Image 1: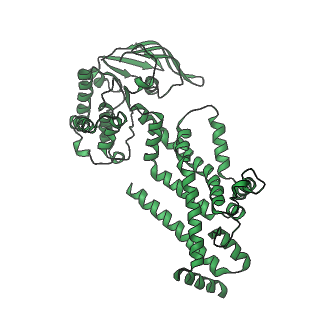
Image 2 (image 1 turned 90 degrees about the vertical axis):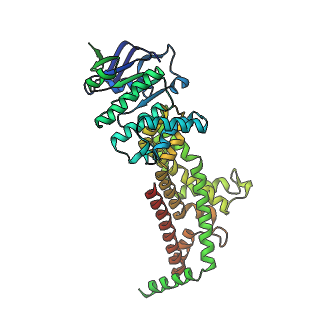
Image 3 (image 1 turned 45 degrees about the horizontal axis):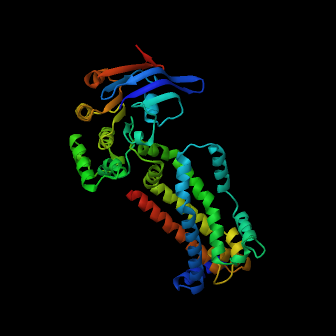
Length: 210
Length: 229
C-alpha cells in the first residue's frame, strides 16, 4: 500500500508536534522512522492508522481516502501491546474471526504464524500473563496472521532478547518480501534500521530532518 | 439489652424454621430486584461502553448528566413512577400501581443511570486501549463494544452487583409504588422499616441477616469469578 501524506499538521494547543508538508511511503518497502523522544514518530503512526483523526492535512492510501475497507488492511503493533484476557491462540485467532474465514483456514493460519514466530509453546497461556518480549511476539503474530497490506510497528523489539529480535526481524522481512507488504517501523535502533529498512526517515521536533 | 438478644434468638429461629412469611418476602425482593437489574443492564451496558469509547459533540455535558443522575434519590424515582402510574396519570389505565411490576419499573429507572455511569466510566478509562486494538485488527465499532464487554466482564459484573445491591437495599421507591402490601408487594426493606416502627424486632433482624447473607453470597461469587479470570 502506497501512502501519500499531504500537508500534515498536528498540534496540542500552541505546540506543533507534527508538520510534514509532503511525504511518500513507497509500496512494498520497509521504511524506518527514527528520531529522538517526542519527535512525533508515534503521532505519525497514529495518524496513518487513523487512530488519531484530529489533524490537518490528508493521508492517501493508494491514492484513496481512508475508509472501512482500507482500515481492514492496516494493522498496528503498539510499543506496549494489549493482549486479550484469553489464550495466546485465541488472541491470534481474533482478527481471523472478524474476517469470518472458515474454521480450518483459521486454524492453519494461526498454527503457521505461531510456528514462524516460535511461540507454539505459549499457545495455551493467557495473553495478559506473558512477559514483555513474549507479548511483543504474540502481538506481531496477531498483526501478521491476517496478511495486511500495511504494517505499522512502534518499537516492536524494544527491551527484548537478541534471539527474539532476530526472529521478529526475520518475520517482518518475510512479510515484506512474500506479501510485498508495506512496513513502517519506528525504531531507536539505527543498526536495526540498517539491517531491515529500505529507507529511513528522521524526524526531529515533528519535522522531517535531513 | 435483653430485648436485642431475644430479638436475635427469635430471628435465628425464624430463619432456621423456614418461616413462610419471611421467605415469601425474600422471594418477592429477589424477584423484583433481580428483574430490575437484568432489565437495566441488558441494553445499558453496551450503551455505556459505546458512549465511553466514542467521541461525539456534547460528550462532556452527557458525562455530567450521567454522573449527576447516578445519585438520584430513590423517593424521587418512586414519586415520578407513582405520578405516571397513578389512576389519573398518563399510564394509569395500565393499572400497575401497587404491583410488583410497578416496583420493577421504579427500580429499573433507578438503576439505569447507575449502570450507565459505572459502565461509561469503566469504558472511558480502560476501554479505549481495547477499542484501539480492535480497530487496528479490522474491527468495527460494534466489534470493539463486544470485545470491551468480554475483556472487562469481571469489572462489569462488579458494577451489576453494585446495581443489584442498590436495588435490593432501597426502600423509598418500592414503598411509594408498591405500597408494602402483605404477600404481594412487601419486600425486605419495607418490612424492616414497618417492623421497626411497630417495635417488632425479631422479624426485622431476621430479614436484616438474610439481606446481609444475600450481599455476602453475591460478593463471594464475583470475587471467586474474578480470581478465576
